Image (cartoon, rainbow, N blue to C red):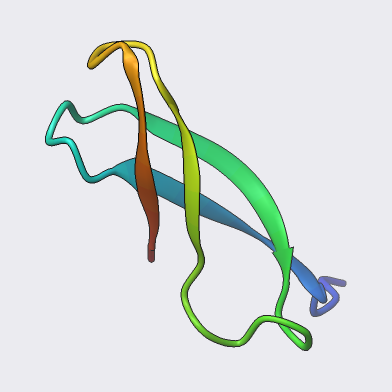
Length: 54
């Protein structure tokens, strides 16, 4: 029987247009909005914003 997970998997896609993604978990109760994190994009070789996609 499947249970509803509080911490769900989310994909973070680079805004640099390289198509690079990170996969992480987030707490739905604490962060109901979409995440935006500044992380390193190895294709662009720079730190850029990564936005959550569903």
